[in-house]
Amino acid sequence: MKRALITGVTGQDGAYLAEFLLERGYEVHGIKRRASLFNTDRVDHLYQDPHEEDLRFILHYGDLTDSTNLIRIVQQVQPDEIYNLGAQSHVAVSFESPEYTANSDALGTLRLLEAIRILGLEKKTRFYQASTSELYGKVQEIPQRESTPFYPRSPYAVAKLYAYWIAVNYRESYGMYACNGILFNHESPLRGETFVTRKITRALARIHLGLQKCLFLGNVNALRDWGHARDYVEMQWLMLQQDVAEDFVIATGKQHSVKEFVEKAAVELGFSIEWKGQGVDEVGIVASVQGDSAVEVGQRIVAVDPRYFRPAEVETLLGDPTNAREKLGWSPRTTFAELVREMVEEDLKLAQRDSLVTQAGYRAYSYFE
Ligand code: NDP
Ligand code: GDR
Image (cartoon, rainbow, N blue to C red):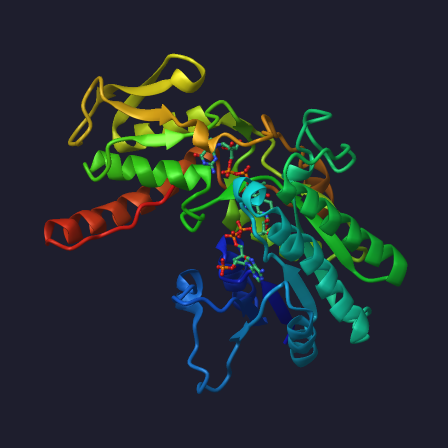
C-alpha cells in the first residue's frame, strides 16, 4: 500500500486529493493546524475513528513554520509521496501578512525538502509542490506555458517563486523526484469563501433568497483561466507517477472575466445583469428576472469597493496545457458553465438552510468579505 502525506489537507485541494488517493488504495496522512475551532469540515466525511482497524486516513497536528514538527511527521510516516498543498494561499492577504506568507509558503517548502534530505529519503519520497499561475503575474507572454518567464506581483507570488526554485534545485542537486504543478485558478463548492468565485456564488444565492442586498467586489475586469479542483488534483497525482520528474502547467486554456463569472452565476439563479458606469462607479443592475426571486428589475446588486483592489494586480492569466495533455494524457473534464452551475447549486442549498434557520429565529451566518 502506498503512503501519501498531504500538507494543507483541510483546504480545498487537500480534501479532493485525500478522497482521490483513498479511492486508489493509498494510506493517506494529512497535516492539520491546531485551531480553537474545528477546521476539518472539508475532510470530515473521510474521518475514521482512530480505534478502527485498517485505518487509512490519519491526521497529524503540524505547521509548515515548525521544522522539528515536520521532520518528526515525515520520519514517522515514511511517505512514498508528499503533496505540499499547505500555504497562506490568499493573494490579497499576503500584502497584509507578507512575512508570515514567506515563512509558510517559501520556507515551509524548504523545511519539507530538508526533512526528506535529513532523513535520507531522497530516493524514496516523491515531492509535489503546489506552484501557481501567480508566478507569471505581470504577463510576459500569452498564453503562459512552462517556458514563460516569471514576474510575480504579490508577496504570495514571490514566496511561491522561492518554493518553485527550491524544488527545482533539490531535484537537480540531490536527485530527488520533486516537481512543480503550475496550476491556474481552480474552484469548486469547497473553495474558500473569500476567493472571488465562491464569494460571487455565495453572495448571489443569498441575494436571490433575500438574505443579502449587494455584492461588493474589487477589480471586476480581471481575467482568469478557471478550472475545477476535482480535475486538477488528479493531475497532481499523475505528475508523481512519471519516470522522470518534470514541471507542468495545468489550465483549461480558456479565459473569462470576473464580470462574466457574475453574469453566468446570475443566469443560473434566473436573473440577468447589466453593467453601468466605469471604474469605481461600475455597478451591476438586474435587467430581467425569471421565476421566484427576491431580486427586482433595476436593483443594484453588484458594486465596486476599492477596498478589494490590490496594491499590484494580476490583470490577465491564460494557461497553455499542451504539455500536460501530450505527456500526461490529461485534459480538464469540467467546463466553465458546469463549474459555475455546480458552485451556484451548492451555495443555493447553503443559503436555503440559512434562510430556514433565520426564519426560525436563529442567527444563521457570519459575514464573509
Ligand atoms: P486553501 O487555502 O483552500 O488551503 C490551504 C491549506 O493550507 C489549508 O489546509 C490550510 O489550513 C493550510 N495551511 C495554511 N497555512 C499553513 C501552515 N502554516 N502550516 C500548515 N498548513 C497551513 O488552498 P487551496 O486548496 O485552494 O490550494 C492548495 C495549494 O495550491 C496552496 O498552496 C495554493 O497556494 C496552491 N494553489 C492554489 C490554486 C487554486 O486556484 N486553488 C492555484 C495554484 C496554486 P487551515 O484549513 O487550517 O487554514
Ligand atoms: P487569485 O484568486 O488572486 O487569482 O488567487 P482570487 O479569487 O482571490 O482573485 C481572482 C481575481 O478576482 C479579482 N477580484 C477579487 N478577488 C477577491 N478575492 N475578492 C474580491 O472581492 C474581488 N474582486 C475582484 C482579484 O483582484 C483577482 O484579479 C488564487 C489563489 O487560489 C492562489 O492561491 C492561487 O495561486 C491563484 O488563484 C492561482
